[in-house]
Image (cartoon, rainbow, N blue to C red; front, side, top):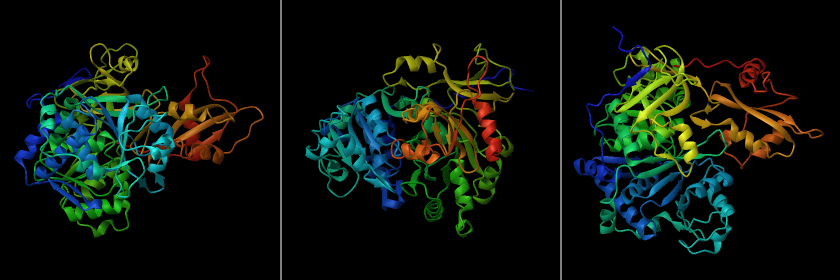
Length: 564
């Protein structure tokens, strides 16, 4: 007997929602498991038990408050994975300070926009990573730093920014070292507990930038209740306990690392294990073996890189049991190899978006493999999902395609400082309209089949073509531009730009890429560039991006990836 006839389902409610702020809930877990390892940061050689992590987070919360930050203030973190990132996540939650995640791929224009959009008072930044010099970028944005005292910055291009904290060990003019900031705090500061007592689970605590069709990032504002409960129920799907050790190579500045990783562990007493600051397949394999990890997260490209590593067979991965594959459509063959060769028989698939904290649907450890590789699972507890006709808003029958919508505790508070965009995304009844096309079967299993909007997912990074188009319009030779996603065997999708040049102007593909370099994040630079006289259009003048995509597939001999 089929369970559903319409594409509408409601999650279980047998486990209650957590109605506490993150700091207080974390303290209850730390008191239950004080001596268990909470975090292992392999590349830093750092280990903290739950008791130690709680104490250091209290010290940092005290330091942040003594630096002049108060409940509701915003502090940006611009860094790859580290113990300091986790400390900032917990400490800001304890102090009621809103942590603003800034993508390490951002460059000066994007950093300036992010800091000013939400009014950050403090920025915590790494110093360098590979070829990126973060201190140089900060100094370009705020040249006043060099002659400022830490805490008293007055920068023309970032007027709310007062303090820049750097994660290195070498002194930098105008900046405060993270270790020096920590030294100003007191792990027993009564002000931290006093502030914690005033916090509400519905207070905003995190802002994550998600690009929009306007071309400018929007600040999705998430509450304690949003992300704490999502992390908890994600961990429940994975059957996490205090015995588990989760390897997290996915970035913390995304919900994947911060919620599906950190908060899933911290709500279950599990150990967080960071193999490196950025992704490297060899260190992941080494870490899983050395730390006897029971879980591993990743986007499909990460698992592909691990499976393809020439030393893969050298490593004992037999301790692995579970983990999450998400961020991009999951290739069926890759999923099967992860189960068979990496021993992850209980790997799960998760689907969501930043605006929903992020997960709305997830498979469980018990979902049959054939369903795990062909759907994104069932609705999460305490949430409601439906698939609707994009035009009429009516719920479609099971099996029919429509827009995926979700409702419940996980839906964001809104876009920071943008009520109009919030109303566009969340309707009057509280439904978040995702823009994704989906189907639901009679048992409630959801399959994401496409996107209403033109969003491109490249290796787990969400890219909105309009943002890239608006940037490329700045090139003096560009008259018009359209950006699309085309299939790619490594990243799932790659960007392709069709460009119409101004009369009498010339430019090459290399000229366009050089124009992009160091001004926008590397993953936003189009890989394929084609110069054309016109775009394919309908009679009414609407550009047909699907025609462009099909033409590029033929021209470049690209094949759509078979996905779950």
